[in-house]
Image (cartoon, rainbow, N blue to C red; front, side, top):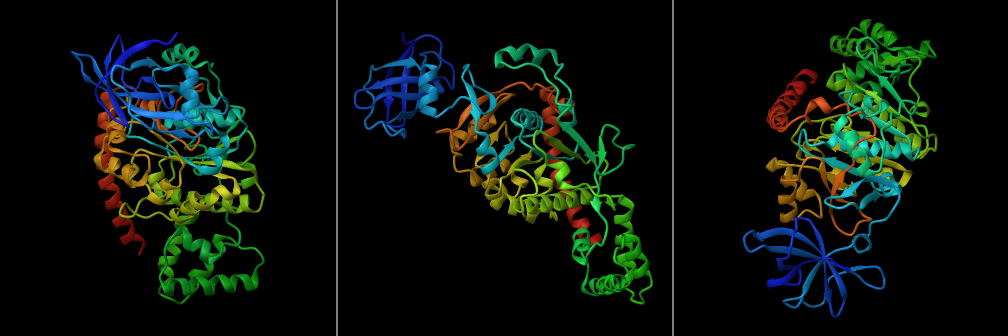
Length: 494
């Protein structure tokens, strides 16, 4: 038996219709109406127009034809036509929801599971965008857990050390109560997670290993990636490195510093200053971290960059992305997912600073899918992320966004964004996401499942609405600070 929820009344169009509610109906409820020409048509309640008269408005989603294509009805519904609650099988078939894959959660208000295809995430990229405190890192943790369950290799760029908590099972009492609803149980991934630090183990004692870059036989181009040089400075560096090569088969940054110090050029002092800064970071080593160690089936390698200054973080992302991209093209490492947290720092939109890692991330976004290199981009400020990177992400997971600049950026960069979607993301409740994916016929609201593992960012903005508001104000201030810092950095490094 179909459950009657109302009767069509008032405005009736090809894309929307009003109906008088019989019983309880909530926003985003899925309904169906019989059409003589096309059969059952799926709709979604988008608003309650008149609470007293109980009149609701539903948008028409459509029906599947014999070829499996989503179609719009050819004629309008008749007034007085009955409106029924849509059943699970009909919703899944019409929206193109499949069973199995990457389990994200349940359709908001229903017990219908939502899965993403593993191949789509890796081959077509994904972005998670939300304001501070809305759960972007939490949702990323859900995807990472699912990818680990499928033995997909992961390389995670973690500026704040949020993802080390993947090692430990979720002990949050409220979330453990919800696990039965989502059909999961608590679990830690300590056997699959390895944490690397570019700093040292005294700064980051929770790390498993040091992350180091090959410091042997550095070329001028590699050094230039660390810092900009004027033509006279480049000339001095070229001459000194060539002289070292004539005397040594292998050389280190110490050898370069000594050779530059012996130069008669006045340009040497700025070069020495830069070289000593690189040496002091400790990032260079004759035993570098190999990409074959970082990218392995069933492993998440986390680059925890706590303690590393922003410029060094940029260089690490640039160096790693360049190496793994080339490694995938050469077949040295298996297909994998590259996770970039705080992506606005590593591939900023023009006008919001510069990053040495921007170009390689654009390249991975546009070409990585051909080589099995998937990209998961996470940011709290969509307006500040390079639009070329965002536009290449076919799967979009958007949680609550309220900043007008961020909403404008989403509208410009995402095809499915409409005025209705803009209003929707302003009022999305905590834990719910708007999902757009190639395998799903239209964007849907998903109640993101609770995490199996502990959430490392819990104290950083998910405890209360006041913290979220304060964090958002601080983010706006941070945007101004970042622009000022980029201007200062240009003055310092020029």
